[in-house]
Length: 193
Image (cartoon, rainbow, N blue to C red; front, side, top):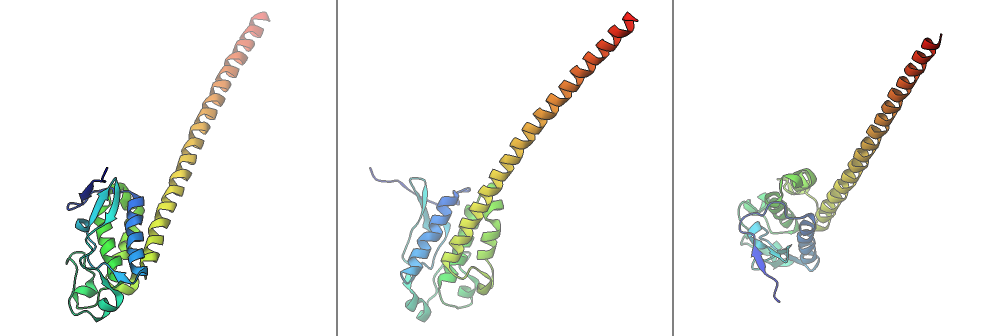
């Protein structure tokens, strides 16, 4: 039973957070092994059994080759500005390309979670980006963790509000019943006089 590969020629909005982190991890592993991908874009991302995977290693080169290369790789929209100015492929250019790719893959709900991280990765100036793929992956992970904590906190607040409304309703109902009983008791005493 072979896994089916679905190429993302068109951005698939809302690709899950785990897949986004895994793309960052794949590039981080490539970087740790001494290589740079050089052409990260949605068309080079596939879905295998629902998980995003990095594809097309035709532009991969070692860090040494990248530093000495005179040819430039990458797809213009996804290529880092320094590549377009004649700079060398590096881990920071992969950070930029992954940021642009995630920008296209994020859905509306993801924008709140990943927007600031993606914006940071797509900084025009490479010194303003995460300074490694590991740092970028950590930022993605932290964004997801913060979002989950926020959702959990908001859920607890909502539960508290529901309980508070029920308690308030019960207190109001008790006050009404007490008022009715007191009024009836007063009326009975008045009739007895």
